Length: 211
Image 1 (tube, rainbow, N blue to C red):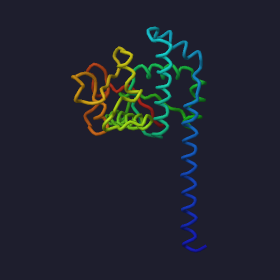
Image 2: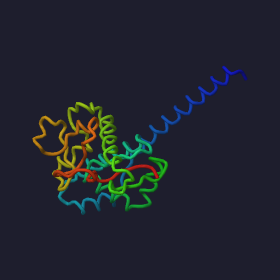
Image 3: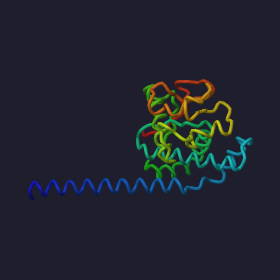
Image 4: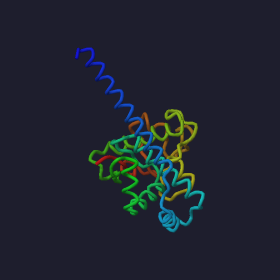
């Protein structure tokens, strides 16, 4: 085999591998999108947060799917959880251990760990994880991350539903009136962090990531 044939063969192999990875990624995103949460999980969550309507609970389940899609898109990189109420649902889902393990295997290929920001090995991972969440959440909803016309669902829910100690964001700094966090700066400012009512730093909640 000539050197030219070797290069062509290697190129073809690389192309096929990339195409397969793209295909499997799409399959996993489709699985997450179509996944039906266990009825027992929804009942338990409603009892835990009785102030939420059925419609609001439905939106929160969709937002958790958004988060899982973002984690799948980010592969092994940490992704901060930008919503307190969605994080509560995630906690409850993990307690349904068999369902959660099966879900993780199909959606990610391995177990998706829940890592509190305080447990991250490097402090900057929390803020990096939030930037990553913002980037992918905007991509999911076709929003310009640097000049958002609206907030992605994951970043909007806590304020929309007035979640106590939730993570509140505004879509731009100019009209923030000193409340919440400027979401449009997340992707370009190292000083931005998530949190509710003035919290900073490690208040970013929790993250997903690899082993």
